[in-house]
Length: 355
Image 1: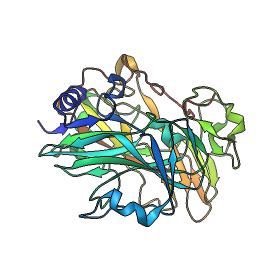
Image 2: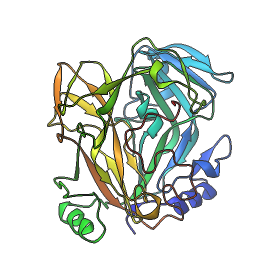
Image 3: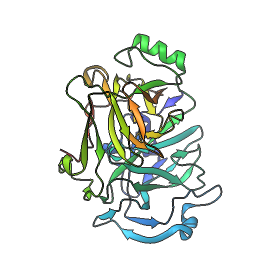
């Protein structure tokens, strides 16, 4: 059956060697509809981001871009504003008919770590064509905070799919009629529309803006950092924010979203019609997110970066699209059910490193 491959299929591919690793893949890496990817033991500091290009390997292009190599075994700081390339522990040999897409994990996006998958023969980021057989690399560009990383850290995830299973607008409307996807009237137009909440039901806190010149964040330290040292609170009673060029914001969607068990979803990285800002680095929503007893609707956290000009963002403005896909089969475990899920039932919430 066409669709996104569930955890059971990922386990079979690992057992068959289609997904392999220098260090055995742990059960904790296997999510309901994706596989967490781990950093390897070293990194290269690059003078520029690059793609290998058709017919060329990443290794063969490194001499053109490498500045120096860094050992990660004792931990190393990836500095804000720099570009790094890290070999991942996993490699893949995709069978015919199966392709893959990668995306940053939730905490990675909420820290403004632009993290993209790079491959041999690659002509675009975060995409693996069917039949790809080779190594995987993570390009990491810290934008707001310098971060301390170590081998084995999981900053990105990979989703595998077979065939075409994206729901069109008619399919989305039919699904919403039988299993509501949002807590109100859905905006369905080339996906499920997401709008921004700037009029909270309680209080006037609507988001956070990353503070410049903050300290280093050790990604392994959960709940270790005082949010006030890294973020400024954003408050408004007017239902409007003026976004500053180059600044990074954490906001929240107005809609509480649910992903039924037989579906997965992906947030489009940006909405071209909006133009002035990018929304959401971390785009995967697993089956069961905000659904049933595990969630009953969860709002999407919006990772927003403004581009060239100050931009007035208004309450209820549509800022993104959520694209739903069928699963090839229902996962054994759903998001938030027996899995360490930091963001189930979330509202406006920073990355798990902050308290």
